[in-house]
Amino acid sequence: MKPAPFDYRRARSVADALGLLAELGGEAKVIAGGQSLMPMMAFRLARPSHLVDIGGLGELRGLWVDDDGLHIGALTTHHQVETCTDPAVLAGWPVLPASMSWIGHLPIRTLGTVGGSVAHGDALAEWCLLTTLLDAVLVAEGADGRREIPVADFFLGFFTTALLPDELLVEVRFPAPAPHAALTEYAERHGDYAIVSAAVSLDLVDGSLRGGRIALGGVADAPVRVPEAEALLTAGTTHPDELGGVFAAAADAAAAAVDPGDDQHGSADYRRSLVRTLVQRAGVQASVAARAVDDDRPAAVPAGARRRP
Ligand SMILES: Cc1cc2nc3c(=O)[nH]c(=O)nc-3n(C[C@H](O)[C@H](O)[C@H](O)COP(=O)(O)OP(=O)(O)OC[C@H]3O[C@@H](n4cnc5c(N)ncnc54)[C@H](O)[C@@H]3O)c2cc1C
Figure (cartoon, rainbow, N blue to C red):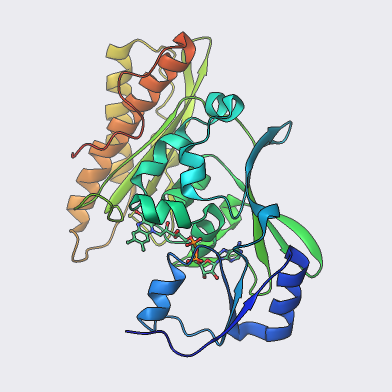
């Protein structure tokens, strides 16, 4: 199908984009990479009367690290993150480049943007999972200036976020480094959205496991953290034999804690069993990545490696 008729405006700056959104009202939609919005328009699931194209705003592109953490401009593409060679990014947040291969196919990653993915708010999107895992801060700009939204207050439900219709998401910030983290998932075909995805970040102090975070996609209307399972990530050791048991227990707790729905992709029980497998796998991959970071040698199991459960 073809989209319903719409007018097209190209923004010259962030201020210009905000002015256009204010002028055109709630019927206007921002377009960034177009990789989610255009298919929705083609299927007539979205019928904006105007598109405000922000794709040319170079000021919203790029990654940089400073005392406030890692900043990613909203228009940075998935592929720019995937191919990032900045040593500060790779040392602090290796899970981000490593996770990009899970997003669709290369042409989609070349056009699709980090900000577009987060603003779209798909519970299965890798960026929604990563921002949830790593306590990201979403920076929005509107007529009244900038505001920072903690991720815990950002994803409100099914494709719904805290962004206002006349606001732009301008930056995604990851305040704290997460050198020991991994994301893994299961999809029916390469490049499909996941049925269930899991991400784990480990807090290792002097080689000892002191805690961690677990986030899941595909089990609720938005990505979720699982405190019941996170509470078990306290082995006080990084010995592989002991860690395997810790991740298995955390995976069981995560599977017991979630209440996924049934759909054409699988039953609730199937999703729970994917949670069990994927949390354990992400934990092992995070600890392997951790040892590789600590030992300054490549990980034996790449954090983004695709493997079927
Ligand atoms: C075949 C296919 C497979 C895909 N597979 C995956 C996958 O496996 N995992 C995954 O995560 N994604 C997948 N995607 C989606 C892709 O990652 C998109 O790039 C992403 O979801 C949206 O980014 P975009 O820049 O294309 O946003 P757009 O499509 O341009 O916009 C998406 C929404 O966000 C809004 N928006 C965009 N930027 C901003 C902003 N800066 N401020 C405020 N609102 C904004 C738009 O108004 C729109 O509502 C797939 C897409 C396709 C076509």
